[in-house]
Length: 153
Picture 1 (cartoon, rainbow, N blue to C red):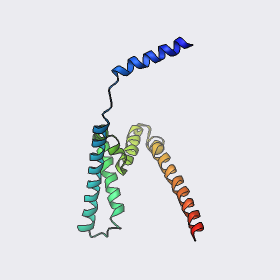
Picture 2: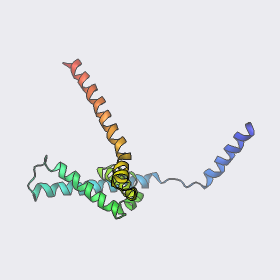
Picture 3: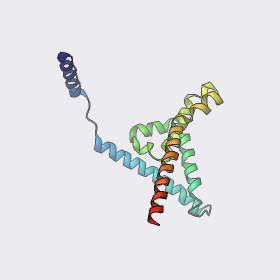
Picture 4: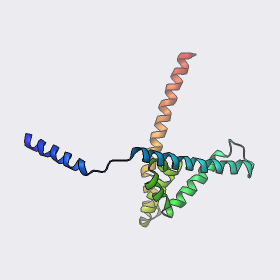
């Protein structure tokens, strides 16, 4: 048994020499810049809705998010958002555009199986878990806040 463990450890050590070192700083910088650029585009869209279309700041939020989702879905369909994701990593995955990308990618992957059994059932595979986690988390945080408000009053 000891020889198997030694062989396994020797193998891990020899492979480790040839494994490329991750560039943490560069990856973080790219994620920060791309995520920030996406947020700046979103702010520009919101400013457009406020100044040109005369929306209030509160009313401009939903159309801004919808526009970002539309742009992300179009870029995913054209194959450009995946290239951005390979470059930026989490910088393109964290904003709402990354969520739209995941849904659009799943829909495109299963379109050959039809609208109902392909697109509609598979589009929410990733999104479903995110929505459920978000709803459950919101409930738990809401209950904690409610109980704290009872104790403070």
